[in-house]
Length: 334
Image (cartoon, rainbow, N blue to C red; front, side, top):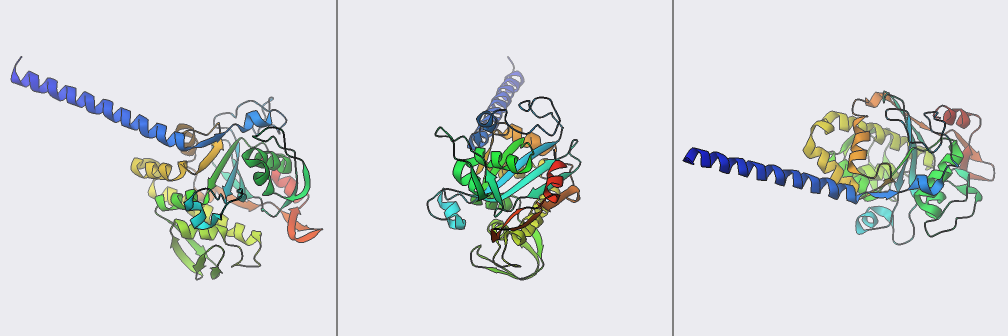
């Protein structure tokens, strides 16, 4: 065998080895990120006693159709787990609560989306929920919506949301304080405009009115702020959260996230360890597959709303769903 032939063979073997190592490394990274995600089998826990899917299929238990309309319950939890969450205001000990709740409706074809916030102070009838430890929690009337998560975790949060809205939640996504802050940092921050000064010791945020580019910790503070704006109610905070949703979508579009593998990896690595989903979304492939269907959805095609509410008769510091306006809104998402 000549020198040139030996060199070509050696180069070929080296290239093959690099390709194998590269594929192995990519597979390891994919497995590691997927393994970070916590999955909860909500469909199995709740069974068939649920609203029909938005697709209008005959079987409530049938899978959602690819490209069809989808409804997701998205929660931000104030988890106390881990030093990072405690440092960001999650608190010491105790169970987590759903600090933020949004129903995200994606229309067929993914040409538009509607985000509806449910105020955490909304008084609801919380149904009996299956518990991970066995048995079920007791049903309760006139309790705050965010108590469902505290009592029965994601399963009870979904069941209570479906009971309140009559809308089938096809998927569930939860992110904690630390995960949200890391997501914003991985995107390079977000730009928002505030209409008034914010000075809130509880959310640790101080901003003058105007346009600001926020890092992850500041963005989390904005999402949590309620006492430093308006009348201090949850409704004012929801307005800031909607501004953040639009800012995040604009940032994803601006940086071309899905065309930048390195940035996409940074974002995935930032959030997967802080993410809980239903078992239909608990892998990196399933999550990115859903995300890629939204890559051409412009921020101005996303409508943000708050469930119509009115002060609760028994407690002016709480609210209840306002009929018939809330009923009409939820009916439009079924």
